[in-house]
Image 1 (spheres, rainbow, N blue to C red):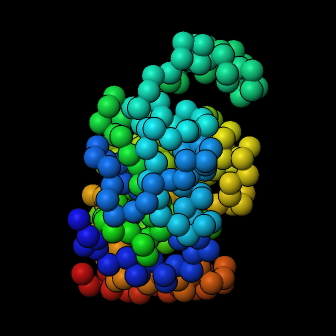
Image 2: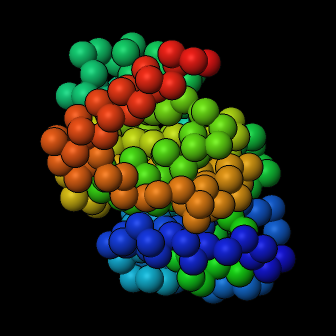
Image 3: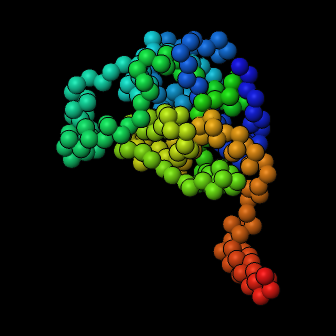
Length: 252
């Protein structure tokens, strides 16, 4: 199915790296090539590779994945020693294995066996409307994306993650919940250790239900607000608005 949304408005954000459209499928994708067999990447590295190489590909459960991505995709089960929390304790991320084991009940994962393939495509190459659109942004750029979601809906910003298994939160959680999520890779062990992104990067993950709203509002709203240009501009505008409203309110 061809993409039906117009994603060209994303160019206005001035992003360094292309947004990536992620698609989950039971059947083998026909529109894009398979990931090379000799690649050995974690799930979060696949997303980054699609950005840095500006290259589309799909990952199969038959491919090698170097972290826990297949577990969260429902492609395989976690080994007992990992599920007991031993890895996180040895990494020094958790005080004891019990702390690591405790959070596994919250980490989002796909139901077993429904995802056989995951496609990654830069936004200008997508032959589909994605299940999740992932945007890597500076704080200023992320503010515009999140504001676009709230602009017409009043949506409350929410960020949910854990110190480990970050891929589950920015790739799977938005799809499972239908809610936009944003995370800082620098706060998550894997992306941080793999040095995937600059320290100030924010990943904004938009599920398919929200993509049309975000795109439409990015087109409509003022991206660079005048009051964000300086502290003086902020106070001048705010005080002017309060003065105007106070005068108008005298005769409502």
